[in-house]
Image (cartoon, rainbow, N blue to C red; front, side, top):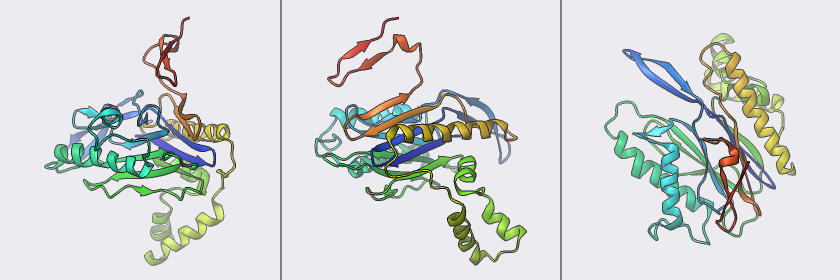
Length: 290
């Protein structure tokens, strides 16, 4: 499972996620169990090198034999220098990028693999960043649920800031909103609240208890710290909650701003960071020497 966060303030967008990947298998007829948890899945990506656009994902970690990570990089190649209809020009928009992303991931990749599958996996994405010549960031969510994928939806107007979390929401929902995700069920089944009034009751409770953690003018470093805190809290919540710890591994964070573009704040490395190169703005590779 996953915790995936998109946190938007005036100065930019922060994407943060854990690195756990859960392997689930059918251990008995119609019984699915966690058989293994890996801790080095990649869930945050720069959609095109040099462009201030990032993607975060949750849900299934692969489509067929290809991981989401590999597929995003396949798409990145197209957007960077493929056929004209795929290439993002200097006048691109985030909405255009989100539409191309949906076309590639869902129509071209997902549908052919799962068209005859009885059980189709769910996958979610948030694509966030800056359109060319725009001063405020945008976030588009793309949901593949039950084999269907509506058009990308704008999470909030460009002028608004906010926090979105997906994957395993329980810890952050309790912390931010003051109640767990099972509250509607408890209201109806345990307290006898009529079904027609449950949503109204939950809205009243949400308005009374929600803590406004995100402020428009929050500096980007504070947004980074908040995103890291929320991912870390979810990891620890998963660790001490009965059952498999399906959120965990290294925390990864990327910040996207108007002038700095897409920048990694925390990132996993396959080998020691001193052996990794950093890509300079002009495309040159700067080597670190220990």
